[in-house]
Length: 258
Image 1 (cartoon, rainbow, N blue to C red):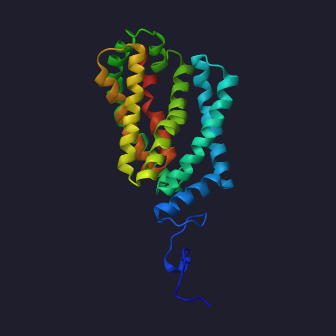
Image 2: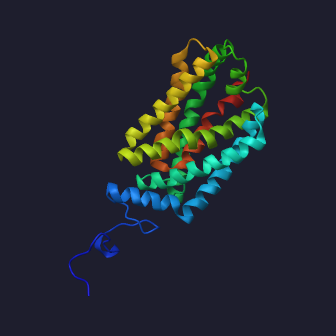
Image 3: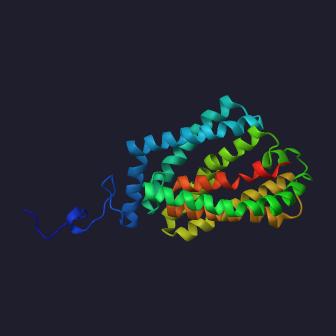
């Protein structure tokens, strides 16, 4: 016979919303940490992480070949790293209330359509105004390979760049930091801001490594604006729309030429 004391686990009929794994959606911060660890260590999460890691690794192979890296070394390392990152993204993101890796069909379709639309609007700006200035600056870099990395001259290199951006870069520079920061702060706007700052730091290191001069502000803008949009798409619609956006944003390499 049930008394008035419910304990720490109220029943479903009392209005407690639980996810597919039976964990409360609106849990406290202390319980959220426990639920995140349970999700991270669960068999279902491991399967999702391995599948996502295999996909991201497959999308990265072309980039490895184009850059001349050692496939026997980088493929296992990427697979291992992305398995951990994918599992963490799933656990942290869902604990923070984000759609995560797998979403419902409506959210997936709406987010992907919106991502493609935004990228299509930005495409003429990239081709006509941004790309020529970036190419001219990269051509003056101390390392001539910088231009080939950012604007590949062959079709295989262009396709590998698009797949790399959709896979590794989206998961590592958008999904992972956004999920972690949202988990720690419970604020999506802070998560978006951190992703933008992280992208700015990466661009700064690349500019320093290549001794690339003006216009530095254009390099930062071309990297930070897509990072902000991609982070918002991930936080609102999940991982796949963010991947679609990243791939569509790099479609300019097929149009602009060298």
